[in-house]
Amino acid sequence: GAVVSQHPSRVICKSGTSVKIECRSLDFQATTMFWYRQFPKQSLMLMATSNEGSKATYEQGVEKDKFLINHASLTLSTLTVTSAHPEDSSFYICSATPEPEAFFGQGTRLTVV
Amino acid sequence: GNSVTQMEGPVTLSEEAFLTINCTYTATGYPSLFWYVQYPGEGLQLLLKATKADDKGSNKGFEATYRKETTSFHLEKGSVQVSDSAVYFCALSPNSGNTPLVFGKGTRLSVIA
View (cartoon, each protein chain N blue to C red):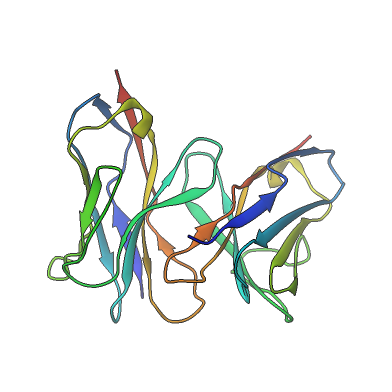
């Protein structure tokens, strides 16, 4: 199946700093990628749809100025958590759907201290 | 709209027990159905899929049959192992281009020796 690579897998940052998470499609081109957030012991919450060459589409309640998404190429989407605070600590996962099923990155555990 | 409902966990089984995790869906049109598995600290991995009615997806001893008449896609395994301990997500794809999957809330399975 298709491979989606997400980096870093873990990051700890200080409150007020920004963190960038990368999501790459390794063996296919992805015009669209999806970013999810997962709270402990809960399901995935869709945050936004990342569109290559255009603005991301954010789900209701997701602050677009806090969660900046850039999809500058057909194989790379980035999520930047700006001015991170402890409440932004979470597990973030990206995915792409080159086929009917979705392929997921390994996830990024963000801890803001 | 599209939605997925799966049985809530956690589910705790002894090794070699029979597993069933129920999943029902609501969808317009003809969705594809999936089961994903998430091991601790990792992203989601596709476990199995079915793209049309009466299809049976199978992988690693797990099976699920796409039942249009009951709008169900129950996950089963005849003999679980400790290594099957994980969170299982039922999901559907509307099959309408680059759209995100719709997920159930997940079921945590713990298998004890």
